[in-house]
Image (cartoon, rainbow, N blue to C red):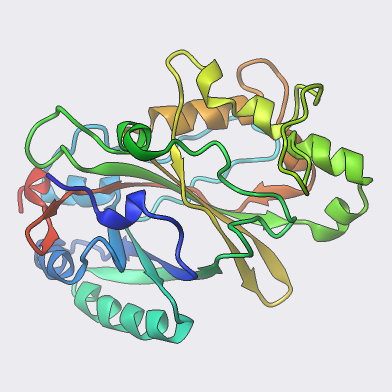
Length: 292
């Protein structure tokens, strides 16, 4: 089974994230079949939430809802939806119109509840100017980190996506001296070199993927977003399960050792959801694990 190709590719110039809830007592089967044909895994990646599998009476191994983290500071919202579509391309207008067509296919069973437009900034940097995804695994290691394998037809080639919208407090960030900004990330902004003596709260030390047991490698495909005066990052990470991402999140929020990630000094998540991205079969998405 092949994964949805965009998962393993670099971020596009523009993207649009669409989130849907399941209509009350709706049977999602027919709408999902229509979407599976329309989503090629390249210009559109499709991810389904736990409620879809439950509505179909199916069990996709590894699929679960976004975790609740009591006591996390700041709070980590769980805003789980039934369906997530990641639209990718060069022109935001084209993505808007494509989204309209996909919304119409989903409409018999799903209602769109949120849309987030995002874009690539410079050479895949966050709006703070720091490079995003520096430690992404490459080539075979990327496949190993992001794609389920050895679990059987319908699951092999799939991926598990964690999606969060983060809101930046730019005045708070800009009030920090440059050295403090670098120490938040644990990297020098201009060179992207890691700072050896960065504090334990630095993001690179909180999320050093090789320091976990087992190692917690994920494949990040995050991009900035802007709406009016608000802006931040749409965090997107793909894994062969949700386990690695969840380990990283718990470390960031201090659940392991009481040390919170310094990034929380100027940014916080507004949303959080888990979505299973089925593999490809032929020209569309393979939904056999959902009984379709």
